[in-house]
Length: 120
Image 1 (cartoon, rainbow, N blue to C red):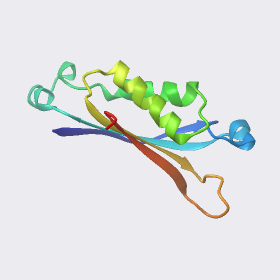
Image 2: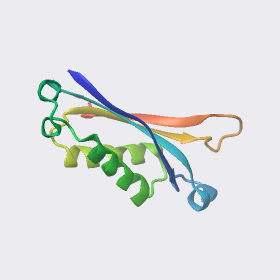
Image 3: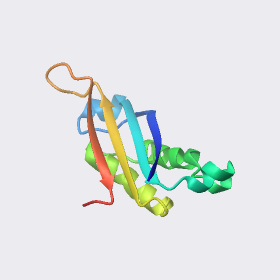
């Protein structure tokens, strides 16, 4: 299988359990990876034969900007659900959501979760 990736999509959003996370927000990074056959697009050089990854970005952005989630797991699940419904031709993909500088009692660059679809 071939691999399509969108990495480092950044969103300022108000996801999190704590009051200051909901009020002030934080920087999140989303990475997307799909396994698919890209043979037709590789041969034709036609957009009609390719996955339009700008549409995948738009679907992820809608979830990141339009819903609230306390947990990264729930947020990643919402993104995975949206992608599976919007792009049924994607049978195998993963979504990684990272929260920059999470609220912990020390230094941490990020907290992150990765969900794989289909769920096993």
